[in-house]
Length: 174
Image 1: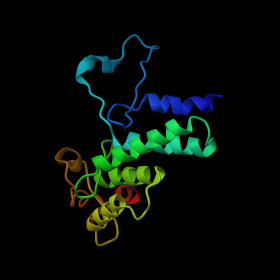
Image 2: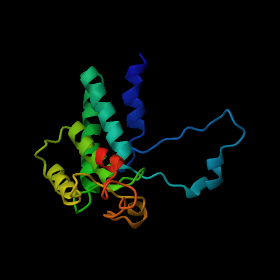
Image 3: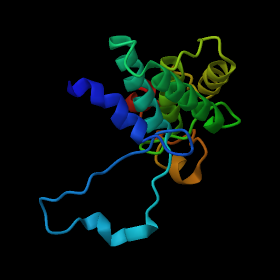
């Protein structure tokens, strides 16, 4: 069955950093792929986002079939959990690479750790919760903009011009 190939596919995407990376297959339906212009200068980094998604999928598969490749899946999940802990920033946040940025990264970090079996009393999760609470606006929401991405620090006034008293619906929903 196709479902049994899913963990194999995910485990093949597990790199030497013991996490998961994004994947873009070559499109053979067109004459050229525009991304080929970049050749060897493009590097695919390990992301909190891909790691969480892969961990969640592996755990869901394990819940569906606890026997198929159980030891390998468990080891992969444990390595992914360790990776998420290693890339957590000193302030308790995670840097989210595919959106703005820290509230988003925290969502993936916490969800990935929880999927991997981390307790909600975990020091990593408590540290992230403290980070989020420390950045919560007085109206109960959060707001940051794209400047967080390139400055790699939380932009506390990022949504001041766009959101509700500095809070944005997207940042708050993450």
